[in-house]
Figure 1 (cartoon, helix red, strand yellow):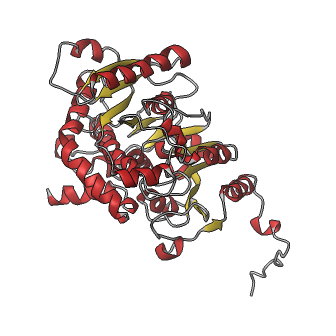
Figure 2: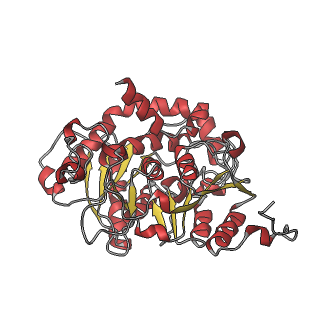
Figure 3: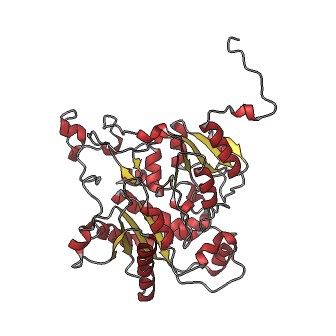
Amino acid sequence: PRLWLWAHLRTLPTQESHDASWTKFGTQMLDGSADVIGQIVYVSKRRLGLGGPMNRKEWTCLLFASGVCNRPRSGCRQTLLCRRAVPFAGNLDDEYNAVMIVPTGIGASIGGFAGDALPSARLLASAVDNLVTHPNVMNGAMVYWPISNALYVEGYALDRFAAGEWALRPARPTRSNRIGLVLDRAINEDMRIRHLQVADAMRASVGIDVSGYAVTDKPLGVELSMQQMGCTAIAVVAVFPEEDEDHLQAYREGSAVDAIAGAEAIISHLITRELEVPCAHAPCLQPLDVSEDVSPKAAAEELGYTFLPCVLAGLSNAPQIQIRSTPSNKTPSVLTAAGVNAVIVPNTACGGSAVLSLVASGAKLITVGNNTTSIDVTPESMGLPAIEVSNYLEAAGVLLADRNGILEAALDPNIPRIPNLGQ
């Protein structure tokens, strides 16, 4: 049990724990939400049809089935880390791929509020073939923007992808995901209706396939019909307690850490770990009083009753998670960590497991100076080689130069002479 706990804690975002207010709030949230998480996992599997034959507990090792390995799955402790496992077929690895990370709950000046990193993501996506990023970058409550070559990946799945344990199989160009919606039983009747109206609006006005919903509770008679819907992604809406009034006002004015987002991240990490499908979370909060002092970076959260629209839009085309390649002549194209050319992060947020894994795999580390955070984990402090830029405009330039094989030194007026390798 102690080894399991140590391994589990290693999978959580290490950078976020440096912010005392986030840690305290996140702990309070988890103390009261463990049962809710368990119910979310239950209704997702039993009513929404999530967790198919590739579920971690049901998966049969291909090596054992083929007779290459004589260790049965039930007694094998390797599971995802087996060195003899069937390799991924990384067809997308030959393209130019980048990962954009803005960690949640660390007070990032760009990406620490409501979709305020989305313009930067649009810019970076225009410079690469595929941009892997996460809900904290893409979600803007009632505001969202479809990026055709962006892969919307939950944070825990992103860590596993970076470590080489999971691969990403884009939903395009075949079809979008069928989204199952899970609502917290604690949501009051008015807010429940509002969220269901949002789901219906996204179905009718945008055409997103929200197949059905379930409420966290004991099993009901809808179990069979919900399983038949065969959902391939899950959106979760849970009730959160009211924040401290002074902290909330500071956040609305653009000068405080988003404590809610930090707690959301932990919930979605645990759900993704159990279900191994695309997942994102939207908090259920009461509407706020009108204020003229709201920062543009937080304004997207002032527009309506729910944060659900951006979550449904992101999950609609989120890539599926692939744990192992299957022995088939029609193996779909997937992206693996080996195919990532660059990872872009704030300059003071270089300690996350995804960053460390990707750099170890050979990806270039590009750090952005003007995206300040409340922590101080620089590439120098971690001993990581990095290309430091001032802003995301420069980061896009570095990506374009690298993608097109342009020598970086050639863009400097003082390019050095060619070195003599024989001396």
